[in-house]
Image (cartoon, each protein chain N blue to C red):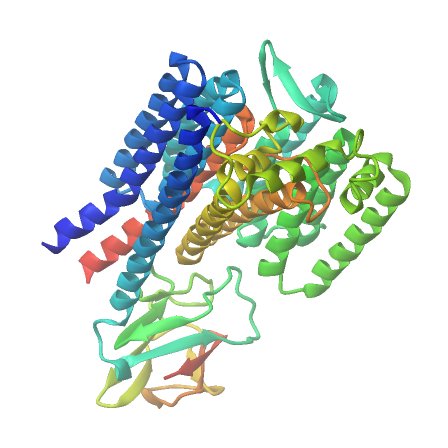
Length: 417
Length: 148
């Protein structure tokens, strides 16, 4: 009796998600003059969700809640992308399908390979190579040189580098990288140098958002793992100095800060984007204007960085708060996986990935709502963006593998007792 | 106001309700999950037969980070071998180094013929000794604070 009850319970949120998708995509179907592509997109989201969730539950692949919440975010994201521009939604669903495949690949590979913790130099070299490729072959979009195109397929190497960087730091934090480099430089300083090299490359690319994410990951990892607090204070000091110099001498950063402090004085030009975003959020009210009733087209880049403003306009402040709550719950579950993990490297990796999700969410939602200066990065799982979706799914696969390891170990221990 | 925007406005309330009920369900499931886990942790051995070893400052430096705390339920063998209850993978710890067990209200510690020896509060032990809380147990030079 008890077993039956719990199994029904597990399905309840999934039913709600299916209901939301059916209602939402049917509504959009009528809004888009009965374009069948809307229905195909909705069906693809649903089928992918049902397949992945069933495999996850039946295969006992660790935590079941993260995938539920991630698909809630994806449903909201795809609904809004379809509503903004059908072609974005259609391309996004292809990326999500690829992401689903990458999720399982990352899960299997991370689960079965046990020697991740001994290759810090490979992660460093791979990251550097990707940076050099970006600098040499990259395209400049909106002032940042962070896109690489191979034929018609373009991707952002900096998203992949974030994962490599976390793995590299995790080698140091878990203590498995204990030998000094070249016999002299201890891992503590070597990881510091690696961080600054990566940040230096990002400065050359003018990718401020990723700099903020990477440096904050580094600071939080050493805050948690490094007993020597002087290192942390020193890094914060260096960051403050660099930030001040950047504000003094770099035009880009001056504009960002000026727009953050006062977007209204230059509303037709530089403050346009952030002002439109604030108008959109305000016009939504508590429950939103309804899917298809708003006018998100006024916001430039609404499909990627500014998707949160569109969520607030069409689904209301409550919808926006729900998105933030979902991210909170995802971060909470991931932190719990990190705490429960027994292997120190797994612990460090899952911590780093969680921090990455949380920081990215905070930075972009804070930027869109004018709480902090705006830097363009994607909102994980919601924004349009191929690399972002695929890499987010890959990191989710890693977290899922760690959670499965812990769960299976616990089950084995119970049986043994 | 067209029919479409009317329906869409109504549905925006429906969507909000669905999303929040979804979040409530997930929170409830997470709550049940955490509760089940804490029940599992407290079940089993009676409370007084639980103690723990907390790593303290030692003369020797461990090459791998130690756990924050090692819990002992009733009995624990400490050593380098993976069969031990408390595995400390260091060169100076023997395969089966020492044993701690609980018997009729007292905690006992005995060396299992280790190479580098076991000490309590700085004194090397020859036979089994009774442990008190806050005693410093030294396993081949690595210090632990014993806490009941």
